[in-house]
Length: 413
Ligand SMILES: *[C@@H]1O[C@H](CO)[C@@H](O)[C@H](O)[C@H]1NC(C)=O
Ligand SMILES: *[C@@H]1O[C@H](CO)[C@@H](O)[C@H](O)[C@H]1NC(C)=O
Ligand SMILES: *[C@@H]1O[C@H](CO)[C@@H](O)[C@H](O)[C@H]1NC(C)=O
Ligand SMILES: *[C@@H]1O[C@H](CO)[C@@H](O)[C@H](O)[C@H]1NC(C)=O
Ligand SMILES: *[C@@H]1O[C@H](CO)[C@@H](O)[C@H](O)[C@H]1NC(C)=O
Ligand SMILES: *[C@@H]1O[C@H](CO)[C@@H](O)[C@H](O)[C@H]1NC(C)=O
Image (cartoon, rainbow, N blue to C red; front, side):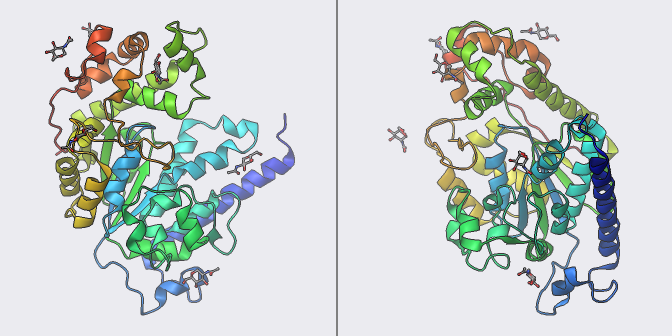
């Protein structure tokens, strides 16, 4: 057992640290950063008269999705609105911090990890970007970090006041992981907090919360006004995209796809739980619990890909924002309204966009045998979300035959 007394001591200190920060944060958010005890230097900059926080209660948006379901693309629709402070997958850092710890901690139960996730979301929604310092590795120095995950995906973190160099030129480009740190230098988390406080909406994208039920505490938190955009996608497409993006992890699937023979060691559990989690969330929403009323919108990625502007307008209406020209221009530049489907962003981690790849391209990339297996594992989920099953390879490859049933998903009221 590698769990030495040092590890234990470290953990106790870490957990005290987290609690201390949480209490401090709570106190700050209740009393306001400038009315608390004098000389609380971390927030001193906020008490400067030249800087204006947003005057009305802020609104909070969670883009709630699963890996490879089109969430980077959908997140960009929100990111390009000037009134939105957008953070791309902050929970990555929680996961990193926990999985890099000692081995027994790795077996951390689901509830503990969820608690950490919710804490971080709550603190980011209340614009305490410093809370990230509990998780960012290597540790921040003077509240400055060069290690924020996918910083370039956030317009707010790469433009004034956070980055004086970050003019609007980059706004219409697909995010490139390196330009922002190169241009802006390390991220000053105090400035990031100020930028957050000056905008009306705080939007966070995550693929690390399993079910919508896990968000109940946040929807009920009186400090937040949370709207959840639940992004789903055909699980057959999700799987294809994962196989292509994470080829090491999905080697067995690749072999299956290429040879037509299912390797015994292929792991069916991941796609099964993706399907079960999606279905569980949708089923919860169909019961219209009070804690989701006015707070939940189901969006199928396929609908967004087929009709990005109309769907984006619907999303904007749901979160209480007007569509902006900047967002419209971004859509035109980043989708291809030519083909029957629009292009998707097929970059692995925001590198290049393959405009030829369409939302339905998975149908040409997955063997019928695999498709049939996923269909039986995800039978209920497909039905619930309006995705048709195919019964032959010919039907699978025939793109004139749509597998997306027409469905209208209204916000939960
Ligand atoms: C996790 O540990 C690995 C190996 O020790 C190291 O290379 C990596 O940088 C660590 N990551 C974080 C986020 O601490
Ligand atoms: C970060 O920004 C704040 C607010 O402008 C400033 O007071 C602080 O000195 C900056 N930190 C560093 C290390 O530059
Ligand atoms: C649509 O794309 C095809 C091939 O990618 C091209 O030949 C055609 O001219 C385009 N049509 C329009 C209206 O842009
Ligand atoms: C599956 O195999 C086909 C051809 O055999 C190939 O075109 C396709 O890219 C493969 N799909 C994946 C996800 O690797
Ligand atoms: C999916 O499940 C339903 C009932 O739950 C069943 O009627 C249907 O035959 C199943 N379809 C497949 C392809 O297994
Ligand atoms: C492809 O699907 C369309 C629409 O369902 C159908 O009319 C057509 O006959 C199919 N083509 C083939 C080759 O099966």
